[in-house]
Length: 200
View 1 (cartoon, rainbow, N blue to C red):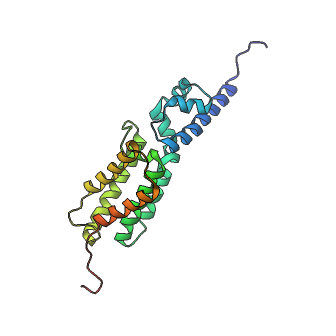
View 2: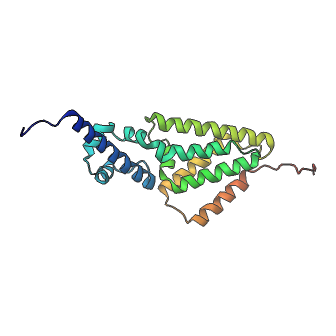
View 3: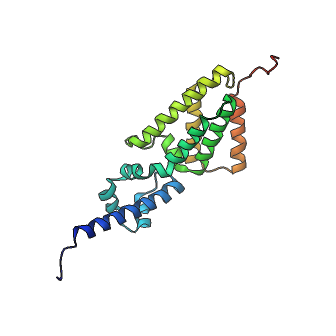
């Protein structure tokens, strides 16, 4: 019949399609430029209106929570999980910091998470909680083993990570060779003076 109202299944299918288009656009935008990308750009890439994003996800925080696993959590938690499998404490710390700084360089959204840019996102704050837990573990093990300087604290490690996030977010992306060299300087600066195996 002409002018008939679309059926509910059709409406649900359209809503699902819009939601998936928005999620796909958000993942691409957030991975490339961070979680602060204007929602207008996400909407344009998804082929919908900004209002549709609010209708489907309730706004930016809801959208972040819908995609944060793909954008940040999966890769970051993989780094954490692998870190915890490394037996040697010095190697564990070096791997974690190198891998984390690599993520910070490649994935701008990681820096938005570390800076707690959206504290109303429970998932984002849970990622930060897990990261803080790992920091505490690494520093405690590093100081006990002598792999870290005795005066180096978990707060120091947190500050180094956050300072790097701020520099990358607001200071521009350095050349990769320069960035990796600075990672080496950081590691050299926080290492302790472990006794040699023969006690000398």
